[in-house]
Image (cartoon, rainbow over all chains, first blue to last red; front, side, top):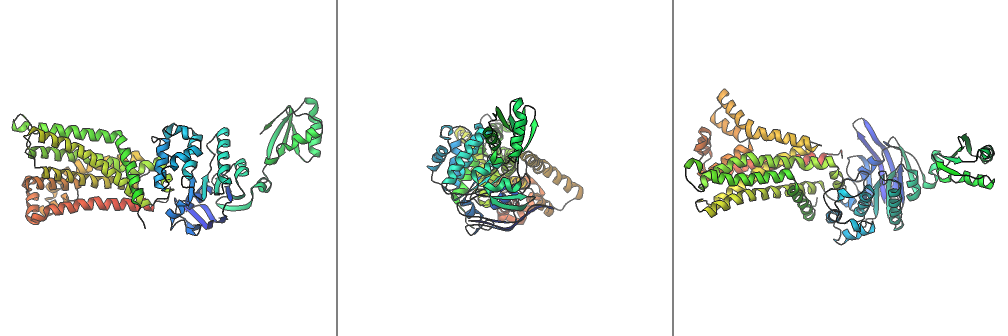
Length: 283
Length: 279
């Protein structure tokens, strides 16, 4: 469906993306994962025709550079930095982009309802919260019901509640069978949305793996602090270490290294050993 | 290469709407309308008649008003056009939509051109209406319309120059600053520079006329005076030379030069806009 072939993008002497090749299959959700500066956003901008590049990007066989308009017609895009005309109302914004995308006029109100913004149709976009703007961007991306959704760090500017709400919306879109290409550096976002993850660093591919394997592949660890009775700390350390956890005393409890998807495992291990956990914090 | 007129018109409508909400644009438009009305009345002062002036005197005042305000208005909105959207980030999002760059450029240009036309129509309309109602205007409506269209051509030339500035700039404030500097160059330095050069270097008449063609404001002024008076005697030796050299074709020469001033900067601006890959 989407095929990146030997994509290279240089800014002067700096190489932002270096000989990147990968394919996104139909109805697959592929995440580009990596730290800031890894080249994820640059790759997306090349796909959208915002940057000139070397190499080739095809979407359903159409060249993103030579047939840019036709390719963009097949994509719905949610940017990282939301830049709308702040004095236009939410509905007028939807109408404006609907006309540009040649979507039926009735779609403007429909998408606002789909992303939960129907009540805010008459508000100026500038008065919407960050989460609402993000939902508006998703609604605009869905105006023509395109087969591919491209999202650049879709939740990076949202608080925890906004992130949950937005990921819930995206999960619905994904279950509708859309092909999704998105960038992220949040492991929970990868876990919630992606089938496959392409790990990038310094503009190049490091590895590609199923999303569920990402933490193990990268050796990512999370620290969980368990608060225990003073008398239970030493027995707990013994139980955890015998269970294969890396644990150490920390104030009124213990600090345990775990894989991101296994934060409850040390609590279960202690419960099985009849040691009560009073509280916990994820570091 | 396909052009979607719907896309261009959608973008033009958006631009027109923005211009009508731009306080600077509204201020210029109001100033133009008020001054056009005032000049229509004050043009009689020299003649010592109470009432409204005849068309010739009013038109001469309007030409000077156009020379001062229209380039300022067109350069400012043109300079803000691309740079402003670049700065706010809205242009990158727009370019990520299924639109061609030339559709965006055309849509923005068309929208701003229409807004300038609306501003000129308002100013000239008020002045024309006052002359017609006063009964002392003796205005030739066709001549008055031609003056309006010449002013519109000048505004397009300045709009194109503004777009050129905007295409090379990423910040609206810088673009407007350059636009204001160019306005000064065209309005004041162009005149003074030409006078100084001709006096210091004793430039031949033919060259002096050629030099004046490099300033679109001079071209507008000469074209407007020629249309009203059917001669350029008022401009001195250079005007007499031009009239003798080109005769009946002189107005065509002026229109052609204005057309070049409209098309060339716009093409250069588009070439730069199309080539930018740093969004």
